[in-house]
Amino acid sequence: MADRIEKIVVAGGDDVAPMVAAALALSLGGQDVTITVVESGHGSGAAGSSLPQSATFHAFLGISPADLVKQAGATFKLGADYTDWPRPDHHFVHPYAEHGTLLRLVPFHHYWVRQRHAGDPTPIGAYSLGESAAREGRFALPEPAADSIRSTYRHGFHVDRGAYARVMRTQAQRAGVRFVPGTIDGVALCSDTGFIQAVTTDEGQRLEGDLFIDCTGERARLIGEALGQTVDDRSDGLPCDGCVALSVRDVPELSPLTSVVRKRFGWSRRIPLQDRSEYQYYYNRSLIDGAAVENLLRQAVGRESAGPVRHERLRNGWRRRPWFRNCVAIGRSGGYLEPLCISGLTLAASATLRLLGLFPDRACDTFLARQYNRLAALEHANALDVTSVFYASVEPDESPFSGLCADLSHPESARERLRLFRSHGRVIWNDEESFSRTYWASAMLGLGHLPDSWDPLADVPAAAHTEEWLEKMRSAVRDATDEMPSHEAFIESLLAS
Image (cartoon, rainbow, N blue to C red; front, side, top):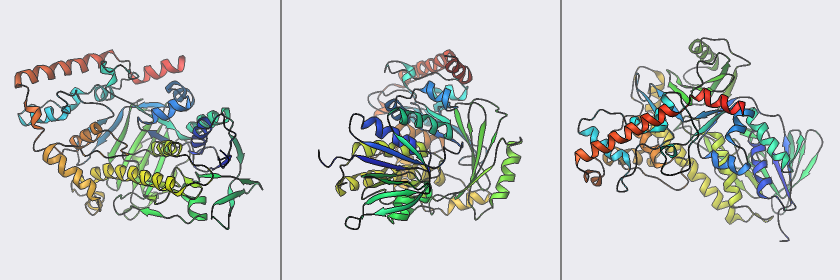
């Protein structure tokens, strides 16, 4: 193939650059392709998390859960724990797990809704091994066998993003990727096609390429500054445009949950790592300034921070054309959504796999780019929907943040999802969803949206039969939870292996 891509340049700055380079190198192994990463730094050391679908990406790269535990300070994530959402004193766990089982192809939550309307107070979490284990701080790896109750949950990770990037860098180097230090300070464009011909660095190197991957973060040195591709701003629907983060070494518990708490000026989350916990406070800068947020965060944590405090300005939205000409933006250069529900690492992994599925030759056919951009926009829109459902559910109180949430402009698609679930318990599920149908249903129920009705097919079993079936499920969940080791003990066993 005469026009096959032979040179790929990954412009770094974002900690996803080595992740993208590793995936490209492993996919193109055996072909005569050189991959070069312009590396400006090795990751910030900030904490982050990934959703369960990242497991496919890790497996493709040959990175096991034990590798991440040993090399990236990782802990396991079975879901998120929400406090004061959507109202004060309301609390729920949102697991990456099934609730119950299908019966006559009817999703389990319809049977639970039927029972709740009949007066049964049993929480839906009693039917989920993933939620039960998360609440009790237990963990074991899921099993692949479909007939095992331990196949009914999935997991993500909490990671030190700097260490995570170094794990990816090692995999990339093993696959032949070259890393050069420097920052992009020049971009040469072809006068005929407008394609990027080469980039130059502040170290004086000129790197020519056939395909360029922009991982330069929010600056978007290639896709934005050089090629002029704009961001579709979504700040009218997502309120947080600032973040303050600090870490503490005094870890209260090694939880398999990300803890999320709604606050007066935004929301905070705790990400538990092996050696520390990182606390992040996401807020709106029209309500409060960063210095005041830092003081609030310090008071809430009540312990001295380990390392510098990080302040960030955020811009919610995504690039309308993340693939333009011979440049593809992945990571923050492609877009950003505040991580109330979605994970930036997961979006970056998904974008990388999407590129591999539509990998071009040197012509970079615009048809491929249009398909990539269409799918990327769908994925971001679906992720925006689930975050919008959380904000649309916030009940008014005396806090400035709840007033701000009331004024947000939510997509009609999110409103339609809410209407259909509230009325009939049905889940709208689209192409390029980051979340399963079960995830959507448990989010709606956790936020307090009890449907007015349920699938009529859920009325088929007699009540006595249904109650016996439900008790068997509750018993199986209790027994399987008791058999699991603690999350901390499971991690210790991996570290010792």
